Image 1 (spheres, rainbow, N blue to C red):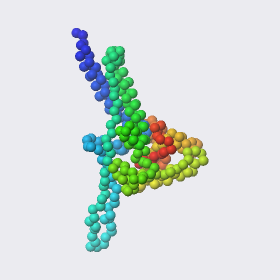
Image 2 (image 1 turned 135 degrees about the horizontal axis):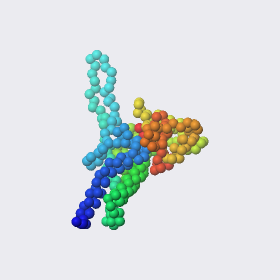
Image 3 (image 1 turned 90 degrees about the horizontal axis):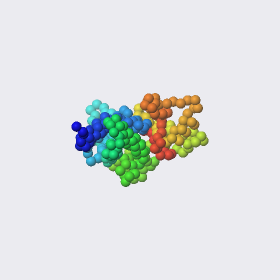
Image 4 (image 1 turned 90 degrees about the vertical axis):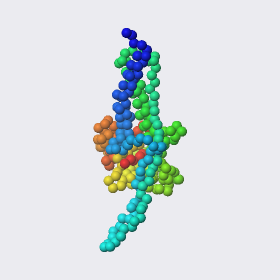
Length: 272
């Protein structure tokens, strides 16, 4: 008995749904490990999942317990209840991509294998396009598309604060919420010492105890400049963790130093 259009459509719908179910886990893994920045962000528990709520909240420990003190025999402790915790608030952002299916395409690509190949190609294109968009947003300010893009590093780490509010916290008043910043000109062979000193100073300024920057990321020209002018001509120390997953990254004091084609010119970020 010949298949009816309804039966054919049902089989195709099942094929499309099954193919996506098989691919979606791998697609999400590919998206979040496609570039050095996203690979770094997804390692060592830096990314967390969220479900529900009007906004995303992150608790911040910013204060000190002022009652810590030494005492003698019969001494007493201060019962002051210090303000120690606040919450950074972030609005939800949504990123989507559609995969369009046309009956004409199904008809022209006859057979299960042909249809699956077409579907896989469309899904792969959507995956690569989402990777490109997320990489671009990661280093932007989050103001594009009417503010619908999520806030990237330029929005989180401005060069200066003057009454700016970041994630609901006044960073001008709460100076502990400000990023560390180093103004360092250069980028050519005449500024080797200045750039080397600037990197060292910013790295040490960002380090607290055993917390040190683990990723240094910038634009391509900076990476090439560092590789060609700062490092010794015959010495190249590469970050093995990045190298093990196929990314090229140099090493600076134990931190991976790399670049992104989406990174804004004349900026370098150190992330812990």
